[in-house]
Length: 279
Length: 250
Image (cartoon, helix red, strand yellow):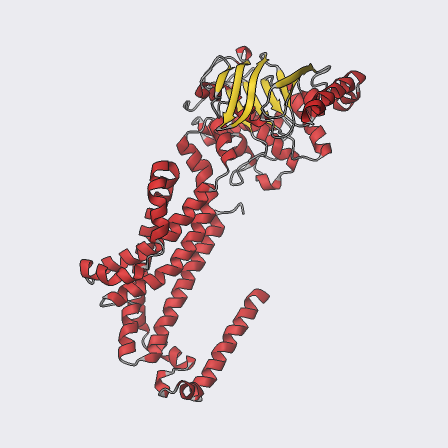
């Protein structure tokens, strides 16, 4: 799995060097497809008969009542667990190790390591692949400038605000250079205003660096703003109750987008579906 | 300022009271003892000064036993903690044994070790190392066990090998635990070294204490106790200092 130092650098895109996946596949072909998935922890059935497809560079939202197994589903996709039944294909790979190679997982809390600076946290994936420290910092540094973190490279995580920490955590996931991102409630710990800002920031980041994304959230508005389509899950054992298309995914102005009548009506529909099952 | 002044005032008060009680003979009368068996702080200070080279020689012997024993304990404790952390079989096999063996008073096996290994530094090292091993091994292992499983998942997803997770996440997370174990171990080391010397030796502060006790050199006995205490406190302070320099993120 480890690659040696000196990943190829191209001048055309700053990010091309960083985005090279460890397995070397192109990001454009990657997609997630799930067939007949069922999962249980000993006696507890968490997921039942689940089928899902995410096209390359598509963004899929997963919403559902708490404890319905959406985080488990995300870990299964990311290759951190093996399903009890069914098949999960990520970037052409079925095995957990192959899914792990094609998918980067961003946990709920930022989990920045307090003994590393912001830039060293962001560059962790490069360091794990054997890239030398100064080279890893140089590559991560370019992203810090592009994504509004310039000047915070040497800050410790404790010195950063909640929003900043989430940005660093997201860059850490992005720098892993994998075609699929699995984001587990990335903004759940933020206050409402910061969360709205971060949603717009993430929309911009995904426009600049398109990836296939599976986003777990309990915030329907967040899901409908950030995702192309949103799967509403039932209470445990999780299955898909309804899949909704978002009217204007990742619009430049979030505030306008979420107050648009088309957006509001889809959001109402999603609420109805959720209520019907969350009861 | 207050943090230093208040305890200093208490210590000075206690020494002053002891000086008055001892030099006036009140303390000796109270304990029903000859007055030379109840030395005053001034007499202890005098013994300390007069026997300074003797004390220094024996302090060095004991200090060496403590430091070498601690070094063995740190190496063995870290290796053990990491092995238990990495292998579930080792953990299942050894963890209950280790916890149980902590209740065995290791100090009482000192005489056996002297019988086996003689009067040299060997048995003392063994006693110090054995006694210091447990707090270091158990604390470090607890630290490794308390690593956030989410952080491990995150690292796996970022292509980290088991060794990289150990080095970049597990080791730094458990450093504070390692240091608190080592602080306890350092305090144990002085006691262990003295017990090792009591079981059989021809030098060291413990040996000197036994001699002074037999020869009724009570003032010098107290002086040796004082030196031992100061040495132990100094070592604990050094560990605390090292912790502050290394664990900067707390």
